[in-house]
Length: 179
Image 1 (cartoon, one colour):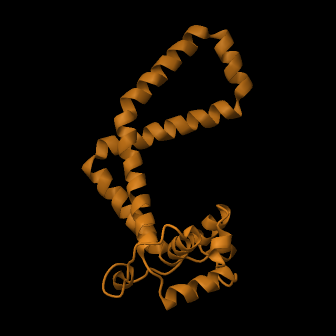
Image 2 (cartoon, one colour):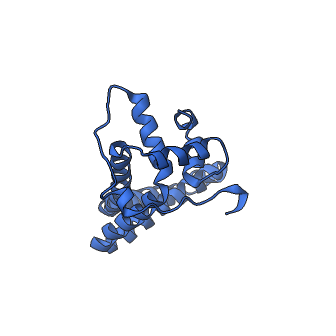
Image 3 (tube, rainbow, N blue to C red):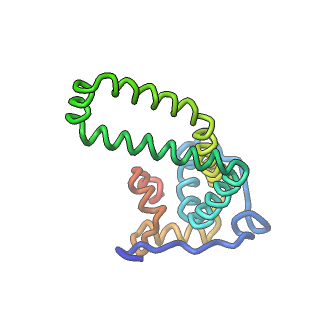
C-alpha cells in the first residue's frame, strides 16, 4: 500500500482458533498486562479480525436485510444531517427564524423517522457491535506465541506499519505496543 502501510497477512485458522491456539482468561487485576495482550493480538490478527467482522456483519444483515439497509440509511441520514447543520450553523438558524412551521414539521418528521427506524438502527448497531465484542473477547483470551511477539516488535520499531497499528497509535495506545 502507499505511504508505507502494509496489510498484515491472514493468519491460519489453526493459529487463530484451532489446534495451536492457546486461550486463557486474563488477569483482570493487572490491567497493563491485559491491555498489552489485547493490543498485540489486535495487531497480529488484524486481517483475521477484519474478515471475521465482515462475515458477522453480513450474517446479521442476511437475517434482517431490510432492517439492516434501513438502519444503515438512518445512521447515514443522521450523520449527514449532523455534518450539514454543524457546517452551516448560520443558515440553519436563519432558516428556523424565517420558516418556523417548516422547521417544526422537519423536527417532528425527523423524530418520527428516528423512532420508526430505531429497530433498524438497533439491528445495524448489533451488526457492528457483535464483531467488535467477538474481537475483544478473542484478543483478551488468546495467549501470544513467539511469532506474535516477533511480528509485534517489528511493528513497534517502525520497520512495518499496518492499518491496526495506525489505528491504535491514533487512539494513544502506542505505550501498550512497546511493552
